[in-house]
Length: 199
Image (cartoon, rainbow, N blue to C red; front, side, top):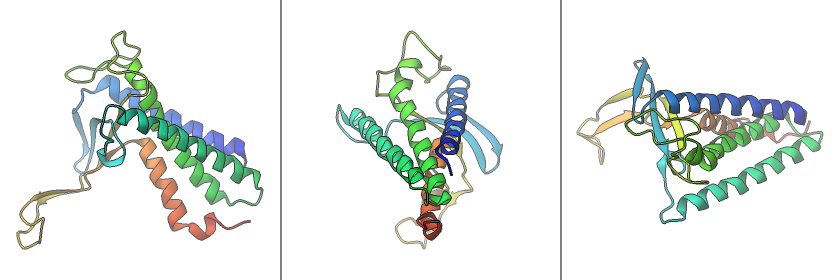
């Protein structure tokens, strides 16, 4: 696979990711939910941390996380370039790296820019290029919206630890960028031999 095709894949994913996030941000109030199917909902949340809402505490935690992401994306970009330059690299590997790069870069755009180009989404629709932004450079929040609560109910009381508690499967809320990263990692895990096989 050529570097040009990898760039095209990355560009398409970034475009779809950002269009979907900007649409949600400017058409949904934070916490607003629309049911598409019983088990598929669009639920607008903002995530200021890492995956699953994990945060780095302290005043500079968010800044550190964003800078770390920038360095990581630089490393992934080099890995992609190096893999393409080695003419015998598998297409599985190049596609996987491209997906991971696009996903990571998509969420970085939110972290770096959204705090200074959008106003607050609480109790109102956000405005793009607002003159009253909600944050500062490198302190934007990542927009998530896809929610697949396949099952929600109370677990049987005989279950240890979780018995009698309410439970939702699958309770993660994510975006296109997260899907790209997960798919890329999935390719590396499940097609490991093909991904790292030199053609």
